[in-house]
Amino acid sequence: MLKEIKYFIFIFIICLFLFLTGRYYFSDTNKKNSYRSLQNIDQKINTYSKNIPILEDDTKNIIEYVEQSSTKKKKKFNFWKLLETNE
Image: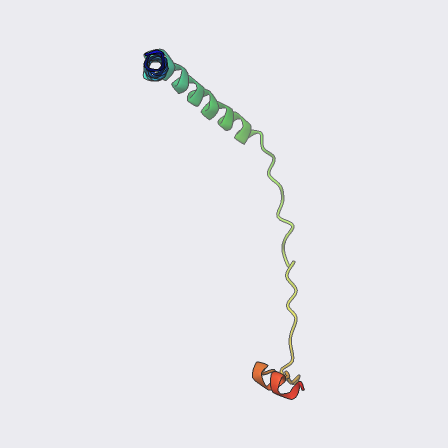
């Protein structure tokens, strides 16, 4: 009997928590506060974006191209031939 009462209290507390959380989340005051905070964030972004300094581009001619000659012969390695010759 005591075990059932304990489970009933746990379930009641969990349901009460979910009900009160949902009621606060969907309330008009919470919606107004969240809308105001989003509006403040947009205003802050606009003010900070106006004050950001623009840096000059200093990456021109940064890439150096290296010409490779095709006269070098590459040694071809075959895996199976290497195993055969290694005795």
